[in-house]
Amino acid sequence: MDELNAQNIYFMFSVGLLVGYIVDMIMGKRALGTIGNLLSGAASSIIIGSIMVYFEIFGPLVYAGLGTAFLLFLMNVFSLHSEEEETNPQGT
Image: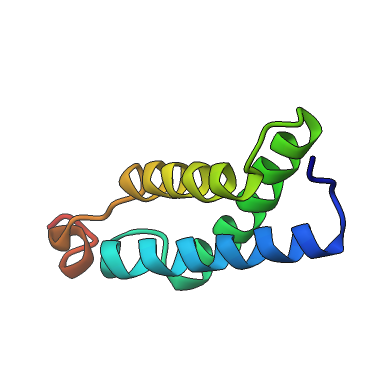
């Protein structure tokens, strides 16, 4: 079984950054932004991967990547800004 060591944390961090970058490229400038996606992706990947290691579930990196993609998708969808709001923030 996998254990939570520095190597696994590094790989979880890398998977989170990669997923955050891909989600940022898909969503564009309408949602959280690059820094928000990268930081949220890295943090959520480490948290989800650590939970999978704790419960001894096989393949924690796969679950960390899938869980991070799902979480970032939800975060970006619920923070979408329409183009009308960006051009006219006052509403007038």
